[in-house]
Length: 339
Ligand SMILES: Cc1cc2nc3c(=O)[nH]c(=O)nc-3n(C[C@H](O)[C@H](O)[C@H](O)COP(=O)(O)OP(=O)(O)OC[C@H]3O[C@@H](n4cnc5c(N)ncnc54)[C@H](O)[C@@H]3O)c2cc1C
Image (cartoon, rainbow, N blue to C red; front, side, top):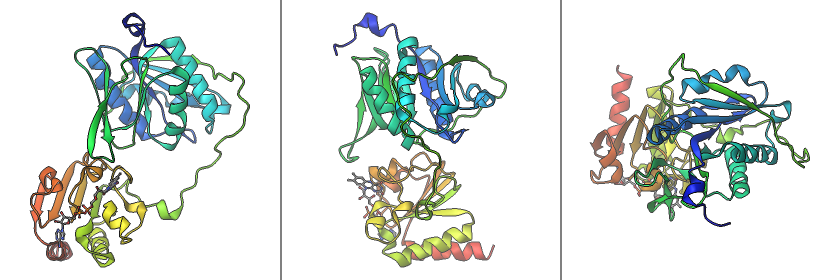
């Protein structure tokens, strides 16, 4: 397909967020995306629109406005309870053709990853997956999409200059959840699901969590995380004891520790593990390579314990404790016990 002319590009306006709806519930990542969409829209002096597809969602639309949306496009139909990627993709494609958004962003969730590449293909648009940052080029208004590349060794900033819309996905907990502005309102546009020639071939009717992956890193307020510096499974037992003493803390790990078999993959944080955004992140014997940092650098307070003061983790930490984890952690546990 030939590149858009400047005139054609000018027909595209506004920043769209595709809402993440699972089993009839709006997922938090939608509000995180609304925060970044609001920032982009303010820079472009345009609007934030949300496309929400599902069933019986009318009652829940208020929250989109409170988190920064100006317009909600509601596609409400019983057939959309569950998820049929072909159907949703065709519907979004139709909406894009009708309303011409300049940017479309979506959660890099299982659903988003199944849905949005289809839409990108249908609209001949560029798509950057798993972005960790989005901004606007002040010179030509392009969306600048930043993500780790080449195994996380560099951060690449990608632009889709020749087509519209520009599309990106972002993992949950990468962007900060904005504060809601209660009482903020906006406009609702109702649209119909587009069936085209789609046959009803599949639908997700239930979602299972297996116990192995049910480590509650996402909801924890505090994560105590260990790396190669913990030396082995015994080191991780020490971290589990530390987490118990702190109360309500979860144990995370670097890939080096997971690859060594000291703890299961469900605990891994980073580019190929989970992304977390906790109040406190305590890194114990983790050097902080970029592939790890991209999974935790948005945590509010980062505490690092390492014998080497010059590691990337020690440099980004709010509190850097230099020393041996096997001396420092037992001391902290002792202090907590005597409190
Ligand atoms: C494609 C790709 C994807 C990746 N994805 C991830 C990912 O998702 N998550 C991830 O974590 N990594 C990932 N990695 C691996 C990453 O590059 C690093 O190799 C890994 O994070 C290093 O783990 P570490 O910090 O535990 O180990 P190291 O880098 O070896 O650091 C160990 C640290 O422990 C300290 N230490 C040692 N002994 C003690 C002691 N007794 N007391 C105090 N400190 C001590 C050392 O000074 C050092 O700073 C990925 C790599 C690639 C190529």
